[in-house]
Image (cartoon, rainbow, N blue to C red; front, side, top):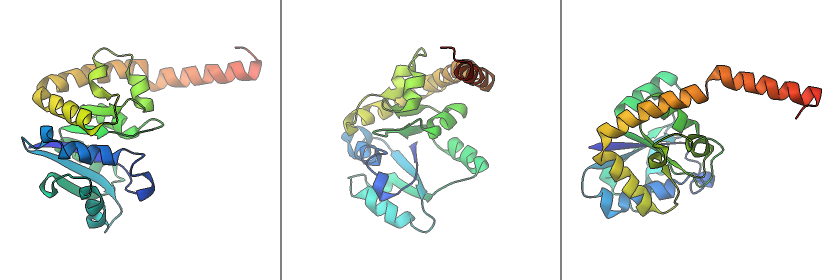
Length: 192
C-alpha cells in the first residue's frame, strides 16, 4: 500500500483553490487503481470527517482509497503523520508558499507540489527538483507523477535528502535573517 498525504483545511470555499479536486480525481485515474494507492486527507474540522469524505468521494475516488482525519495542530502529531505516509502532495492552483511542502521536505518525505506555489518557485533552482514539481492542473498528470514516485521510491527518498540539504544551505535561518536585515537597512538609508 502506498499512502499519499493531502493536508489542509477542508473549507468548501477553498476546495478547488487548494486543488483537492485534482488530487481525488488523480486517484480516480486508472494509473492509481492498478495497485493499492491510498489518499490520506488531514484537515477536516473535528467531527466533520464523514462530511469531508462525502465531498471528496463526489470526485471519483474509490471509498477504499480514501481516509479522512481531523486537522492536526501538534508538531509531534505531524511528525508521526509524516512517518505514516510515503508521499505528500500539494496540488494547489495557487499557493503563497505552502508550509506542508516545507514540513514534508524537512521530514525527508518526497513531495509533489504545484508549479503555482511559492515552494515550487523556491525549489526550482535545485538539481532534480523538477521531478517534484507538477506544472499541470490535470489529474492524469498528477496520477502519473504519483505513480513515478512509487515506482522509484527508494531513489526518491535519497534525492529528497540531498534536496533537503541543498535547500537548508541556501535558505538557512541565519542567511535569511541577515538578508532581511540588509534589505531593511537599505530601505531606511535609501540604498538600492
